[in-house]
Amino acid sequence: MRIAEEIRRPCAPDLFYRNKTIPSCAPRSQRCTLAFVYGDEIPRISVIVPAFNAEPWLELCLRALERQKFLRRHEIIVVDNNSSDRSAEIATGHKDVTLLREKRQSSYAARNRGASAARAPILAFLDADCAPDPNWLLTIDEAMQDPRVDVVIGSREFGRDCRSLRLIADYENCRDRRVFSGRRFDTYYGYAGNMAVRTAAFRQHGPFLTVARGGDSLFVQKVVSPNECGAVIWREDMLVRLLNVRSFRTYAHKMFVYASARQSTQGFQAPRSLTFRDRLAAYHTVAAMYPLREKCFLGGFLAAGYMAWMLGRWYNKSLAAMHLA
Image (tube, rainbow, N blue to C red; front, side):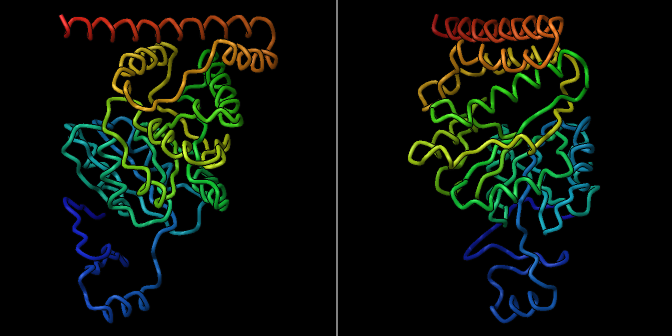
């Protein structure tokens, strides 16, 4: 376990070989000798996990990362974002985890902190309340074999297998498939809870803006604007499970929170919302796989989720009006 409060890079990144630190200012002969003795251990992928009071989920997240089938070297960086619980202690309990600290209260600031310390050519962003599939890193590595790809966004399922969440997950994955297979790049968005980025692209288009919500989508829009849509792809087999969403009530609350925080991206090049026609097409695609009863349930769940979203927007506008008054 390595705890790094501050990383200085006067000329080149420090190298780490079997828990030994080779300072960037060390003589070239020393750096080359240690690299020869211990082997080239520069990681292929850096996994960055921001953590703020993530005690209920972080252990499950890190265990899932330890069960990855990816055989090439990778590093795991947990960035504690002023947690008051045992999040940092949990991270220190895993010897292959590097713990950093970010004092600015923002998940995007924590991700930027982790990205600045990462040593791999690929950055894999994962939320602390998510458990990746065992093939998660393999899928990222496979997708990045295409040199045209700069960003890979994965699919999601929820922490409990119940009717409402299963139907919603099917709908959201179908919607995402339609978005990222289309040529309307202004609808492309990001999801930093399950997203991989080439380090070179992050240096060019980043860092994330430290807004309340949507900094990942703003970053994706920067990537696709000067490029073809092929620079950003979606992979259904790049799967994570959202551990903290275990009921429809939790899902609806997330919709409310996301909508109420959307104000923070106004004035930036935010992605365009899908039309009702696009959403209806995704609904019909998913509904075709289920009997009539499930179709009705899906329609009801989506309508309730939409109401939670609109309520969040109304709440945000009300707060803005109060501040202006």
